Length: 245
Image (cartoon, rainbow, N blue to C red):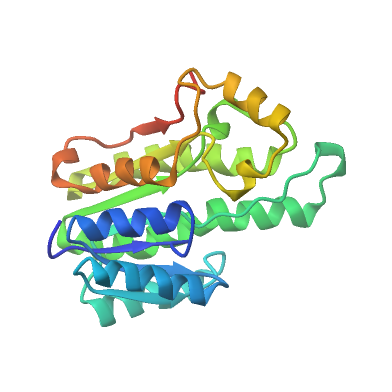
């Protein structure tokens, strides 16, 4: 992956930061997108630079098409190209269906699904000219199996799977692969703070019996971005310990 340039949306923390590190280890220059947390994004760029690659932070609201167009233009100008797009930016606004407000639905769909569409459209314009590219969408196992209290989030992640498959067929003739990675439960500060009874109930649903770490998801992304995955497109790679079987 040396000589390639990747844009990781939502790259300032959690899975996004692990993806930044994984791509940097493969020799890929990384543009780290963030929405609000500039300090964390800068930490991610410093980590990538320490691994010997160019890295810069860029701010944008991915739900705004004009900001995404400006983001991709800035990455192109300041980093010399764009070969890999990782659509990782996402939010959650959990609520039961009968209590869910319109703005909770709209915020999640606009960021998680519409934002990925904006980024893919802007990046594909360049990739089509180069006749090479990788688009990797971070969906979720709940987009496959559902989850109570997350109608908006599940719908956005299921929509990402449909988007992935449509774009894979559309862009394949120009050498662009489009795939998705569907994480299950990830070991984070949030899962660590859950009551032990809740944690055990979650673990019992996972055949492998343990939570994934962000690096597990990042490894799948790095593989799909690599030349070794050149014959894989339209695929949803579940990194969920068997939860979605």
